[in-house]
Length: 226
Image (tube, rainbow, N blue to C red):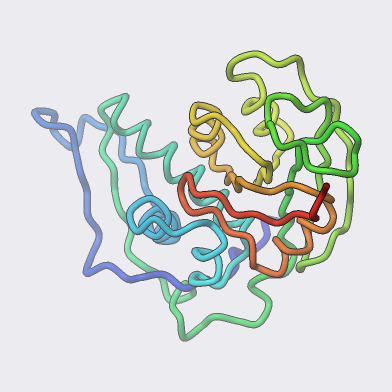
């Protein structure tokens, strides 16, 4: 039996809207439906420029949920544009409204945070130079699993595919090329730059909500080294 969708806070629409290709009757196109929560995540992240952490707080869901909403919403829009299909923006439902938000909106959501590393202890500051990835599964703000994954051979576009294939929602590293950033974000992932030092220390700061990604801006958390 499918799990019920968790309630979330979304901006309502005045009605349902359909956008169709020019010159093609609506009856001859396939209609792709974008849910109100997908639209809200896209509006906050892609239009207003908020990061996934901020968007999750506004919508009262986990960061993992935001990542999935962005991924599905972007894919639907691209399918509509590429294949000349109609796009329908669905209006809100009662269970999505602010008045019905419950206390358990953050439960049972797994967030996977990945760190490029060579020694399994410190963050590798150059994303493309790492030999391994330390991946932490987070549930209810706590680490429930840690994995060390062997990185693939470095080549253009390989690391972002590796990130997506291993369901890593957030990558925290020192530096990364813009093409890799764009590819990871295109798959619904988030990138946080400017981190170095002990991986578990950086993860703690991230989980406390003090480490944010603002476009291409860098944030720093590190130990002082001579």
